[in-house]
Each structure stands twice: as C-alpha cells, then as structure tokens.
Length: 269
Image 1 (cartoon, rainbow, N blue to C red):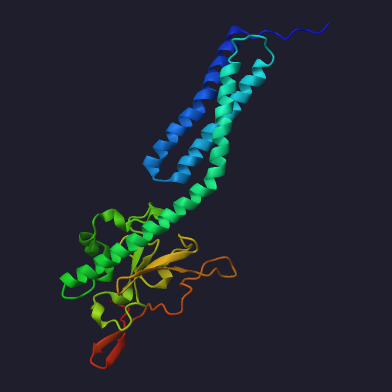
Image 2 (cartoon, rainbow, N blue to C red):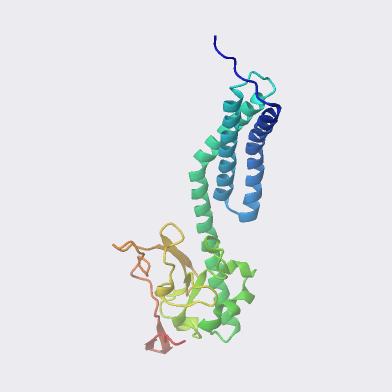
C-alpha cells in the first residue's frame, strides 16, 4: 500500500499560509508601488519594470506555496489564496511584459518633446539676455548664470535624459559676447546644444554627448531662436561622430563687422 502524504507541521502550515497571502499581496502592491515610482521618478518605464518585478515575485511565491501544499491534504494550507495570487501575478506579468517596450518608446518620445521645448526656452533666454545687455550675448564662461534669470525655472537647464547633470546643454563658445545681429546666417549657426559637460559648459562640436540622447540625434538651438533635432552618424569603430549629419550647420560664424565687411568668430570670446 502506498504511504499517505505526510501532514505538514503547524509551523510549516503557518509559513505557507503567510506565503499564500504574500503571493496575493505582491501584484496588488506592485500596482500601487508602480504609481509611486511614476510620481517619484517621472519614468513610465521604471514603474512598469517595478510592477513586473512584483508580479514575477508573486508568481514565484505562489508556485512555492502550491508545490509545498501539494504534499499535504490540509485544506488550511493557503492553496486557494496562492492560486488567486498566481492568477493576478500572471495577468500582471503578461500585461507588464507586453507593455514595457511601449513604455520605453513613450518615455523616449516624451524626453524628445521635452528636450526640444527646453532648448527652445534656453535659446530664447539667451537672446532675451542679449536684448537687455546692449545686444550682447552672455560671456561663454558664465552663460548658465546669466540665462537663469530669463528662464521660468532653473530646472529647465536639466535634460530629462541626464538628470544627474546640473545642466545638460552647452553654449557655442564662438558666440560669446557678440551681437546676434552680427551673425550672417543665424538660422544655420549653433547657439546652444546638448552636452554632458555640466554647468557653464561652452565649446564647439567636441562637447556633444559621447552618445546621442534622443533616437541617435541631438537638439540644437540656433542663433535665430529656432530649434532642430539632427541625427548623428556612427563611426566604424562604434563611437559616434562629433558633429551632426548636416553639412549646413555652422559652428564658427561669419560675422558682419561693418557694411560690406565680414570676419570669422573669435574662439576666445
């Protein structure tokens, strides 16, 4: 005759009941926690990842309960609760797994849109500073300090894709302390652009991020105030080119000195 399954000890029953309840609570708390992650990090992808982690943990916990309880005939083992937890965890994990790629895409689209708006506001602030200071653009070494007063709030200098930086943009060093009206081709001349060099960063194309932040490209604010996203090419060695894939972009502007005369921008400005 076969041996009847051994009854679990009271201690084990208590543990499995607790795990059964936990397997039910995990997906529920995962949804609640995901909302908290959204508010804390403003990242939809991070919140979906959090919920997915809770759901997978719930699946593992519920499975453990069912395997353990399968050896017992006790109706008090927590099997029913564990089954409910498994069902919720399974549904949540499927939903999160399917939605995670879309969440990443939506987040990138949101960052792209936000960055474009920020660069436009920064470029407008730089030009507004010039209007209030004898038509001169700010000094390149203190441009962040100068433009802050012309922004709705200081956080606009922080790119959402690089929240660790006090400023995610740089100023074209060739335009420091010159008049915008001197620039012959303002619609082609870079004024501000994305960079990882931090506060008051100023320079040229060499200050572009090592890796583009937004769909293999970067945002540029031009001397006429308009903003454009431009792609970058990848080099054969896997690094990214230090210039946009657009031959019309001007870094060193041609300046009008007087009627009929022009000169190149001074790098020391």
